[in-house]
Image 1 (spheres, rainbow, N blue to C red):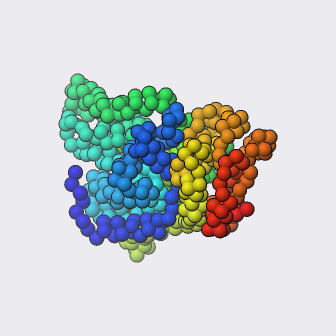
Image 2: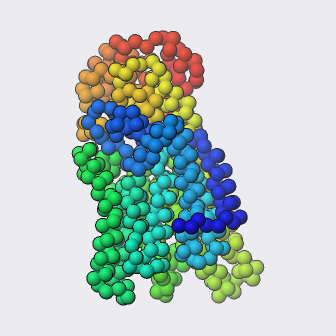
Image 3: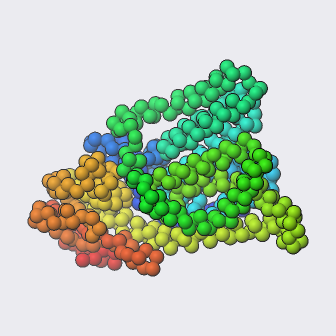
Length: 516
C-alpha cells in the first residue's frame, strides 16, 4: 500500500501525538509486566509461562504482543523501553492508515486532515501507546485490516484474491476480540455478496469460503497450539475477568465510561443526528454501514470487558472509526445552518466552529485521567519496580513470592510467584479456591506481600502468625483528593529465611515509600 504524501496536517498530527506521548512518558501499567514476564521466560527457558517448570496458565490476552516483546529480548533491549517505543511506532502508523481510510470513505483530503487532527487531540491515543500493553498494535492492525477489506471488497473487483483475512488473523492473535470482529466482517461480506448481482452464486460461495479459509489457515495453528498448551478452550484471562452481567454491573460499567461520553458528546450528537437523517432518507452506502457495524460491535464488547485502567483503554480502537463518520456529519450541520437561515457569520463558519469545539472538548479529556496516571506511574517506578529489584538482590532462586499485584514486582524479583488475587490470572488453584490459606502457607512462601483489603483469612491463621514477621510497608501511592485512599503493601518475611537488617535499612533509607 502507498503511504500518504506528506503534508502540513500530517506533520502536525505526528508532532501533537509525539508531544502528548512525551507528556505521558512516565506512565506504565502494572499489567504490562505480566506480558514481559511471559516473554522473558520464553526467551530464557523456551516456556511461555508465568512460573518456569510449572503447569502453563494463559495469564495474558495478547499473544502477538508477547511475541513482539520476545523480539526485544532477542535484541537485548529493555522491555519497558522497547514496549514504549513500539507503541509509539504503531500509533504513528495509525495516523497514516487513518488518513488513507478517511480518504477512501470521503474522497476529500480536507476532511482527512481534520480527522487525523481530531484523532491525535484525543489524549487516550497517546496515553495507551506508551502504557506497555498491546493497544496501539491492536488499533493499527484493526485500521489496516478494515482499510484493506474495504478496498478489496467494495472499491475493487470482488472476485480478486483477498489478503485482508491475513491481517484479521494477526488482529485475532493480538487480542481475542479480533475473532469477533472477523466474524462480524464475514456476516457483512455474506450480505454484501448476496446483493452483488454481477457475480453468479457459485463464485459468490467461492469468494466467501476462500475469505474464511485464508483466515483460518493463519489462525487455526495458533488456536490448536493454545488449547493444547494451556489445556483450555476459552482463554483463562477472559474467564477470570468476567462478572455475571447484572443490572448493577452494567450500570457501573456505563458509569465508568461516562466521563468519556461527556467529552465526546459533541461528536456523538452530530453523528447521531446525521445518521438518523441518513437512514430516514435511505441515503447510505456499504462502506459507512460497515464502519457503523464495527462501532456497534466494538462498543458492545466494552460491556463484556471488565476494565479499571485509567484513560479508557478499551475505547482506543473504537475512537478512530467514530471520527471517520464525522466529516459527512459536519457537512450536514452546514446544510442545516443554511436551510434554517442561521446568522450568516455563524452559518458560514459552522464547520470551523464545530471542529474547534470538538478538538477542545477532546483535549480537555486529559484532565479526567492525567492526575491519576501521573501518580500511578511514579508509584510503579518508585515502589513496585524498586521493591522487585530489592527482592531479586536479596533472595536466591529457591525463594518464592506471593502477591496480589503480580506485575512489576514479580517481573523484577525473578522468583516463583503465586498470584493470590481472588480472581487469579496466573494460578488456577487460587482462582478456583480463592481463600485457601493451606495452599499458600503450606508452601512456606519466602515473602508475602499483603494489604488490608482481602487477606484476613491468611493473617488470622496460626501458621502465618507463628512463621512470618512484617519487615516494612511499601506505599504505591498516597491518598489525595483524586485517589481518595492510600495503596499500601504489607511486606512479610518467612522467619526462617535470612535477609540482613542492613539490606532492609538500606531500602527504608532510600525512599519514604518504604517504612516501618
